[in-house]
Image (tube, rainbow, N blue to C red; front, side, top):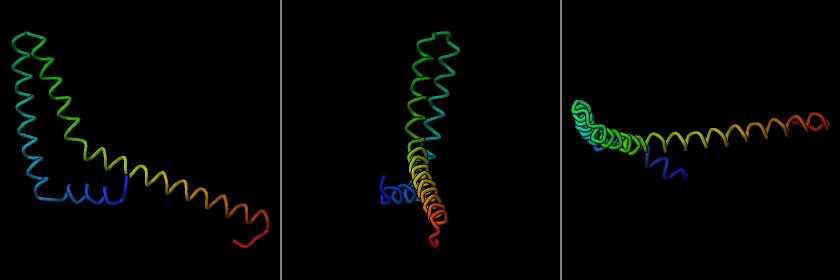
Length: 101
């Protein structure tokens, strides 16, 4: 992903609105967990499974920002490591050939 997208996502994480959204997510997550616990007590497996599915989808959605940033950072690290290795190989080849680095 592009540098502008990375910057936009990091700025989003630092915004006050993001903190409000995280608080709202925490309240919604509590509702899902409470519903799952209540459904588990009734002994009806289908109700529990429904809430478990809701929780899984919810967790995927709320962690998207962190996962996207992590992927972007991993790509940059991979590119940097590849470039560094290429530079080292070029320097070694110059030394072997007797060229000045």
